[in-house]
Amino acid sequence: MNSLANYRKAFLILTGILIVVGFLALISASSVIGVQQYNDVLYFVKKQLLQGLLIGLILALIASKINFRVWQKLSFWLLLLNIFLLILCFVPGFERVINGAHRWIKLGPILFQPSELLKVTVILFLANIFNKYHNEPTSKALSKTFLIYLFTIGIIGLLLAVQPSTGTLVIILLSTLAMYFINKITGKQILILIILGIFFFSILISKYNYRLDRILTFLNPSKDPKGSGYQILQSLIGIGTGGIFGKGFGNSIQKFNYLPESHTDAIFAIIAEETGFIGSVVLLLIYLLFITTGLKLAKYTNNYFGQLVIIGFIASIGLQAFINIAALCHMIPLTGIPLPFISYGSSAYVANLIQIGIIMNITKKS
Image (cartoon, rainbow, N blue to C red; front, side, top):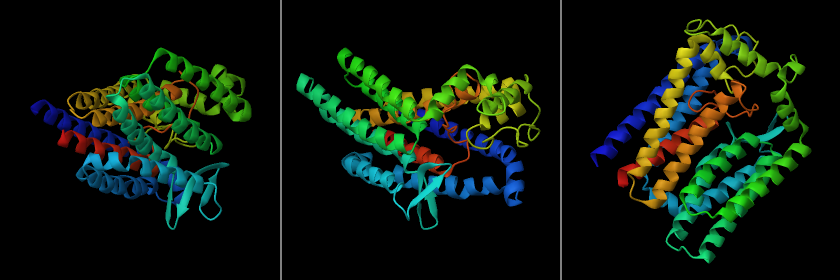
């Protein structure tokens, strides 16, 4: 019990460190665009504080007080509500189309992305399904679990594909697969998932040209340095010019309209430019400690549903971090996935904090 209490404390401290690092990075990365667009150097910082951190902390506190078994009982209805909200993204009067994407809905003064909440609701639902059939190692139970998984991911995949929100789909797919591998999955099911995955993403690439362009740009960004390759090249310039120790806090050059999305998806490049190789490695180590500590919490949790939920949440946050950083370092194609607790964006921020709150309740009740 003492080990669990210590890991809970360490996990909260690491989350707090990421939040602090995130706001320090945002102060610098968003300063130029804040002044240019809103005549306020702290415009995005204030919005992140109010719409991201404050709302997120309130919801995380509420989530930490609700017995996680309540989430388990409501998991199907929460997912159903989330799917309904995804559909609203295409309904006139609720939809908010930005750069041709139907990812946002507007409810009064509130603008948010329902797809970010899927990182919570899908994991809760599938954890409940896996838990339900965990003690039934029969072929019928394994097949039923597999079909429910395929149907769930299929429905969500279609909705996210037409938004489009491929990055979110990738995170949900990988984090739920992490849960499935902890559960019982056969070699045949793995093969089916691989074949279906290749088929599905082949269709996405052929239907939406921009996805193919991202892959081609990844292979040769210098082919179109002022067009499709511009962001990754500017990101590499920022990371490279940071050197070992960086240019110092607030001294980034790339944030002066050279690097697109410098305060959102590409914020790591600004961090690397200002803190250098040392600062970048420290940030990676913090994420790594966050992940390993979270997995320790899962290990010491004596409820199988709770274990699966923690693994799913930690996989979701951890994958977002490393995919974002890998993309900006030109190791994989750009994905549009934000850096957890650091990139500007209230929907993702709130969803991540809700996950932390639920983890705290699971480990408290175990």
